Length: 118
Image (cartoon, rainbow, N blue to C red; front, side):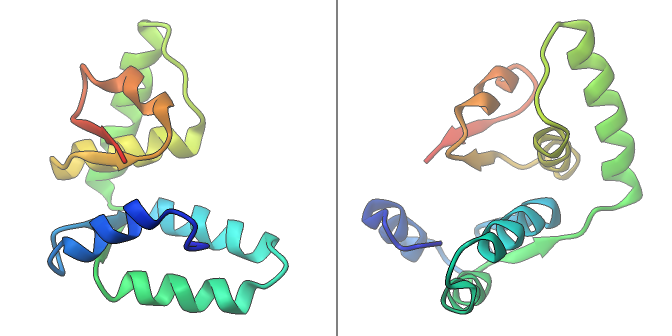
């Protein structure tokens, strides 16, 4: 959001509108982070520009049900992520999408879903 990663920005600009979507959970995390910074108006404007190129996926009943199953499955395997990360992973699973993140913790879920680290 702060425009410090030229490679990531260039990659996002090559994608067609609709090729990438954002979980509503991720949007909440981004918005929280923006408002913790010293210049939120500039960052809010940057986020609005990013959102012009992607849809925001709503948290639905199907996603909530997938979240509960994912948490139980991973707990039985001794895999534990933060609640928000689990919600984001469940969202990708429920929508049958690849999860793209910079957070390498998601690599623990490669057996459950497609994960790409950008």
